[in-house]
Image (tube, rainbow, N blue to C red; front, side):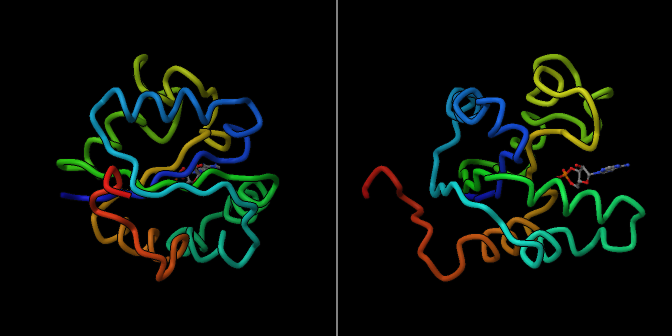
Length: 143
Ligand code: CMP
């Protein structure tokens, strides 16, 4: 069973969208494996987006990620990475289809309210960054 990392970003938390976003993942058939509401520091934001550090918007992205609490989650299910990306929609909300999370809840690319891992390798890296060695259950309903 595959796992993926999903994070409701500060504007999603501020706007009260944690619940609606969790509902969409549950309705789709995902199982929640881990969740934490936290404030991330600049180092963690920079590590999380390390592949974007040469982009002109990198500083703005780190400012945004550290501007308030985020909700970090691990969701699991068949083809979790690809299914989560389909549910979340395209990076730029202008291009995201209605019915996707970004298509329904966001307006611009800098504030696209939610992040989802773009590959299985990214998911493993991001889950490790946010949840460390803390065990992420593969059978959360048995907790
Ligand atoms: P996310 O899916 O979290 O992955 C990288 C993030 O970089 C992306 O969502 C956007 O929030 C952000 N991003 C990508 N392109 C731009 C851009 N042109 N301007 C500002 N932010 C961007």
